[in-house]
Length: 174
Image (cartoon, rainbow, N blue to C red; front, side, top):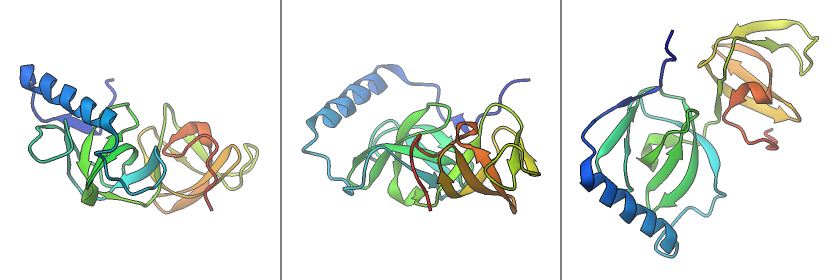
């Protein structure tokens, strides 16, 4: 069974214009001084706020829409900033630019690869509260050591950090 994607193609016509725009955007990234950002650390995780968010090939509405994110709450990683635009990467490695208003600082994580048990405490021997399938999104409540506590559809429990995407390897969240 094919894996469901959380983004969908918007346009298959990418031609030479897109390659030029991509090269221009890369040049702007290297310029550095032209970029005004928030001053927050990069990369960092946030989540999608809007029910639909256009992901563009560059930082502005003049750039074509390449993908549309269609899951509110999906975690994304901000890897660059330009004025009000954020270059993001999703859990599948897809990158593009979205307007900051499409994002929120609410921390979420997506369950990876296989069905995972949410445990009552950060211990694999503790009772199982619920089971989460791959692609399920939960709100991150806290992370310490190798475990993160999530709220998944009203079920609160602990998952191993390596079972989710949306938190940095050594990040502590209170």
